[in-house]
Image (cartoon, rainbow, N blue to C red; front, top):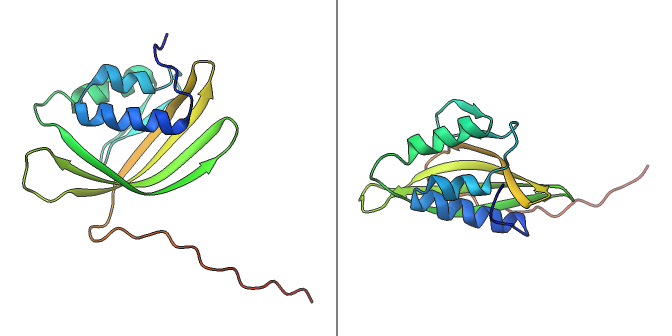
Length: 146
């Protein structure tokens, strides 16, 4: 049973990125649902399904000595009573490395459970390099009925 009760999807996401930067597999798996239908896709990697497979993927990612630094931007939130989806841009760099950060497009999905909100999906893909596109909303054209 999970120890942490996340009251909002935003709390889960904050804990997810803290665990990612710390390289802490136990903290990472605390944010995930225990459900066997969870899915994780790392940039350029295969699809990992089920709690054990997702855990193994994070353990492998964190097995090296390098730690990541992640900046999140361009968040778009789709929200419902039991499910929240975040589409965002991650800028990922290796701490202490002088190489430029890598741009990643990510989708994170969260589900409300009996133990609070939990992550059920993390899908990250390489994004085009260059400045992040700011989300802009065009004003709607007036609707005309004929």
